[in-house]
Length: 315
View 1 (tube, one colour):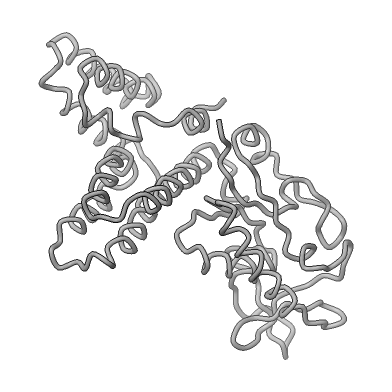
View 2 (cartoon, rainbow, N blue to C red; view 1 turned 45 degrees about the horizontal axis):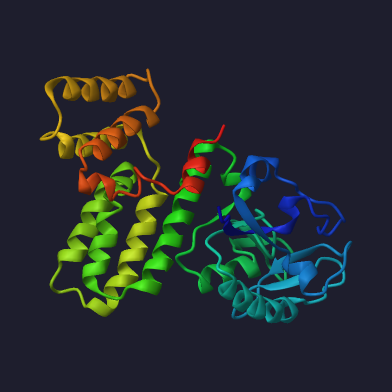
């Protein structure tokens, strides 16, 4: 199986690239996940030519964007790192990248809440993104991104990698298709996945695809924005129950009374916390294949590729 390519700050892999010669190895990410992920390590500060160890740097107010300066000598490395960033983003775009995990609060890699210091007063006056992280988000606006400290739980990791795999499918779709009919088919194959994350966004996407006033040239941009917003919503028992009942309705005309009873009991056992979600999903998959129910067989959520299935069920 081909591993999926995900960018990551080098220090999170245990590489000694930080200003003090240390690292921030994150075993929550690099343990079992490394069996499935082709990590693409990036360290803007060392790769642009700054040494290890090096003087501590911070973001300082500037125009049109914050500057990256050393704390004591006030050396400005903004142009150096931005020049490197431009070529690095071009390289990453060509390499096939489907997500990125950044080091929190880094002046180059921090994604949220990075302190920006007032040049005159020397105290934090606002917050923003690190220079590389900000450029990366601007260059790949729909690619799933996260900071490492937001991915320390199984649910958070599953949510992130669900978005990563969906984004990979989206890029493949764009490379192979360019018709509204194909987009509707792509959307239909994500029905159950969307219902398990956000029925509200699912309905919004349905309306988008049936709106005669939507210019076709804009619909792809709007679709991926709403799709990624939907998948950022966490799955809950209530949403999963809604999704399971939706799937069960498609099997209704095929199942015998005993099979309907079995499926209903398994779904209720999930609701009662007696079995995991994988139990009713496995039964629905079984019946879908047994009765050749084409709608359910088309659903990515039920029939994941082996690598994605392993990620979602590891441990």
